[in-house]
Image 1: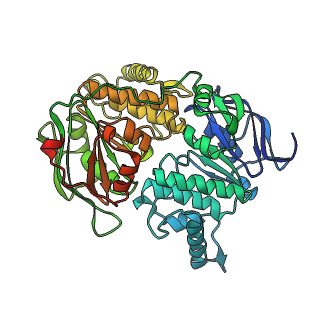
Image 2: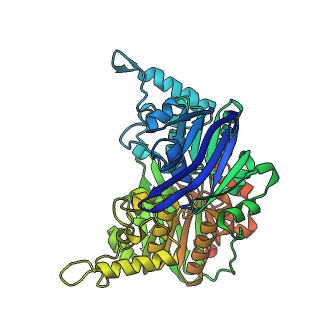
Image 3: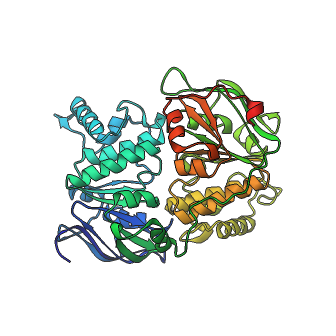
Length: 517
């Protein structure tokens, strides 16, 4: 191999407890190119990039940077070599401000004191240059997932890295932000930076990448020039079969009202006014209703209010006609509410627990899983978890005993979906259910949500993916600035029209609930 390559990863093999995550993979990154890495959930993409970033050591193979063999023992070595990484699951200190997180570990100092003003100016300059809108003084625990993503990117740019690894960078961004980020990546490549871009979104790869390497189940499948391929070919190489990109569903047949939200308000943690302001809507049995909007317009707080994760300041929540406003989270769940949360790590899983313990997290106290004196029925739990893992294709290195933290993001997501769908429920709330999933898994989850609808369940979907917003639901409610500003039939609207309402440029006349639903 010649030295035109910024990075060469040669014959990389990595095993975990006998499970081979990377099996003899070779990947080359040219200087100034955007190179996409594509593969199913659990294919080994993040593991490969974690080796390049020094988080793991390869069992076999070696790495070259600019033609020279290097040993990357830890992320500090990677940073010293100019290699930066935006992780799929953010590495942020929640009680720190955005600025403190960006400069953490590379704080500019003078006589032992942090030069905060200088650091702040550099961060603001970078954020303006690359269109990465952040509030440097906001506490990280209070900001949206989208702003956390931007914070991670600014961390990398602040360190002046020239090899940039983006692990699913657009999974949590809005369509507008994605467009901006892809342009930023192109600009960075023009400036001479070399980018490795892990994504499941084929249209993004087609738009931004120069070349794409595909891996499947830990093995190298091939590297293709983007100019000479198409999305269908890439998806077939990734999953080993043809994938249907369009959601197949019959006409909805809505029944009784399952969820009714009356004049709901939720206070904001970051400013004086409400994050959700006087919102009312209904979701009926046998329909999928989607809340669409730009990230940060109250969708997160609305769902947290409905599910009990946040206290509400006014209004009522009715489930099957019963007022559950003051119910505990467990009581809401037992009453028929299932929830696929936006943040799978914070609200979906106990990361240090095994897969099987996470699967029964909301049901362990039931007679099937606990005996009369309070001891867990371990065999029943294992059998149940194995059944769901097989049914929902949840892959893990050590079966149902696998610690969930070590599983890929996509398989963590599939585990949550398996648990929530299999639980007894009348309403399923799905927040970004396909975030970070490959096209094959997305197809499966869309089918699952349509099957829920057709089985007479009510589905409340929150999505930032405009393709998903247009394709999956039967009705769309657009949120802007904490309020519902429009209601649409996906068959009678366009992405452009939705975009105007999402940006606050237009509002519908007040929704007549009885006529609308």
